[in-house]
Image (cartoon, rainbow, N blue to C red; front, side, top):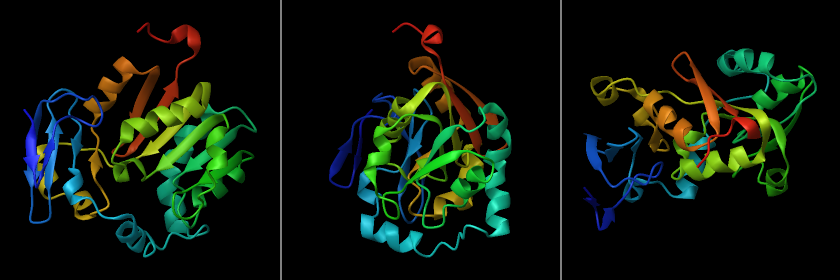
Length: 228
C-alpha cells in the first residue's frame, strides 16, 4: 500500500522496490516506513536534510586519525576483516570523513587504501578502480538509495572481494522507539538481518553479521553466482 507523506506518495521500498509499506514508527521529527517484503526501514524524502545541513552536522564530529577511542570503535570491523584479506591488498574507504582513521589503520597493516567522501575527499576517480576490499563504516544509514551504493561497491570489488560495513542493526520495534540511532537526523536508512538475507537472494553475495553493527559481505566468484 502506497503511503502519502507530505505532498508526495511514497510508492516503493528503496531496497527491493516492493510497494507494501507500513508505518513502523513516528516521532515529533519524522516518520519511519518499513517494507513488508524485505524489512528495510527508511525515512521518506520529505524529512531528509539538505546537503548543507548534513555537512554542518558532520563538521561537528571529532574523529581524529590517531584518536584511540575512535580507533577502538573502528577495530570492531578491522579485526574480523583483516584475516580475510590477502597481504598487500588494495582497498577503498568509502565515506571516510574528515579524519580517515580506518584508512590509516589498514595502511599500518600493509594495505593500500584509497579514500572517498562526498564532502571531504570528493575525488571520484577512485570510484573507477577495482579493489580487493571496500569499507563503509557508519555510512549506509545516511544513504537515501542504499541499493545503488551496494551495487556500486560490488561493481568495484574483484570477485571474492570483501565489503566491510558498520551500521547499527534494528533489533525490534519497541527498542526502535527509544533508540539513540534515530535521534541523528542524518540517519535515514535502517538495516536488520532480514534485509541482508533478502539482498543475498538477488545479489551475488554472502554475508556474516558480527555483533550489533558489523556486516562483512563477500562478492561471490563467477562460478558461485546464482543464476538470474
